[in-house]
Length: 574
Image (cartoon, rainbow, N blue to C red; front, top):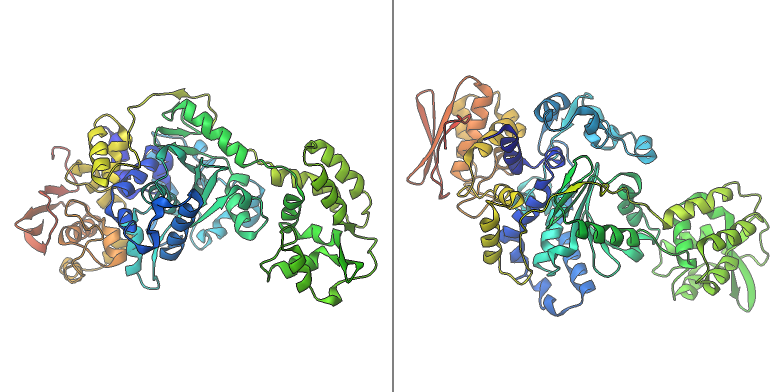
């Protein structure tokens, strides 16, 4: 096995953000692993999704969204999956990408995005400031089983996962439950975030646990501001799809060029919208420095009255009614009488001028609207921010996504043909069938932990090298003590199926594991303590046996796997 193949296949087990960046085929492999899993298919039996196939697209996606909101939380605890060092990771991947290129596109290696990320201090933002500058988290991406298993951890009442985990789970759930074709679902990775874009209607973005429609993207709320942050401030490094992927730093792309063109146009359309009175007010909501530049004229008790924009927005926070909705009158009825003035303030612009103009000139060009605005903005000399308003407004309404250039060598690959009409068993059969000729399908078997179908060498490599939480917790204990602790953990795997295995850090984090998984956890602890020695692992008659220094340690197992390997793995073994 080549070193690149071994690294890639072992990375399919640990799935760190770094590994997905270096080996972008892993991104979609995890989507397929989640589609193969029985876990999301169980959602279809939940009363929450009763008759969902008869419902509208909007109903379906909102139903999936609310289910995810109720059952999963966002987790970015640096210590969940342990820490590593920049030096170690750079050495590991030096033959695949150079350090300078990595620093331009990965937050853990120097990338800080645009002005937003410089202003927040990237290391402090992610809690890295308590470590030396060389220490970085693994930030492993979880399978749906590992996400569900967070319920076993103290202080968690639901499942959990980081942004890549949520994006890949969302893609699988939209396909399995909402029956959205995979051809319409695109995964988008930036150096600091992962989201999905669905090319249905005006477009949908999934952002961590939430969804963002095009109208929501421009509604000016704090939630949409957070959803916009990555695409506004970062370049897109990877776009991944059922047809393949494109990566900003690699010369070859496997995504269909026609599909990528369609995606690019759809995303661009989503990120551009017209200047209307509604989008103008939504923009103003996002930046308080403009609030004291405007007032609104409202007929109250038959007389024109004026209320400051700041007051309107303050009342909106506690109301279901807004200035730009059909319930505008209801909002003004909620505003206390003392907030209204009978005389117009000369240091504030009257918003009604812009409201009337924009409502009556819907077909006018953006430049003409700009000239109208700038003419009236000059009437507000006491508001020094106004000269910047229109540039900021244009940027709010028009985002140019920094996508990977399409000047790649597009390589056609064997397609994975999966329809939303297929059963889980038929989908698994298709992925297994294509695995010898499609690398993403092959990697999906590794990500899904199908140990009956994959080589053991990458798994053993991942066990030994990338399970620091388990190793660190057990490193100062004697071998008999390690055995005693692991033996008494509940003998339940987070992977119910007998041919799938959890990694040592999953066993330790969730404090449960099948006997074979416990044996691998013990092996990882031993070989990291006793680096010159080898541990032998085998399964005989429902027992996992670990042999070390003439001693044998046994764990009962229900995993139906024939195994006889050494840890660390010797190249001659198969």
